[in-house]
Length: 239
Figure: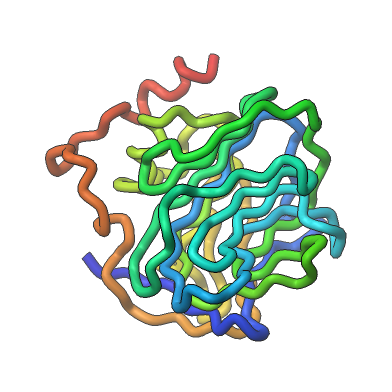
């Protein structure tokens, strides 16, 4: 079906959460999953897709595109995962980065493409940005479409990641910190958080437009309405 997505120009467009108050974004150091649907507008860019940080500091966890690859960087340049998939502009990709307390994994379209062990512990963060990331390379701005961004306080399994990419969320899933799309905001600059906490995004620049929903962009081989691992079973997985 069709839904709202946001197009970022790669120059000065981005979205971010509040850094304090009742809508402040805060992460608990420990296992996490960060996901997004992205459609790059060009191949020759170094663009930040999703990043967490403290205020305006260097991003702690960031997914970005560099040239024809996607990269997940965790805490420092030493912990960097690069996809095998080559980026083709104009196509949707579902990206998911996980940390289980010891091991980092990076998925593209529900397929594990890179992983490594890390000894680096995660840090507290209080801001999440979309379409922009501050790294040691500087300010990275993304040109393209982004939708259905989520952050979890758990390392999702491959089945859960595949289910998430196809069906989205209900908002009541355990360990869901936040989930944003652009279909239910109160205005042109809002994206409502479906997660267990009230935390909305503010869009700075960027253009909303109606597009084919990325949630239907892939077919993992499951029949309509069938999930590889139902959300009802997620609590058992995390307990």
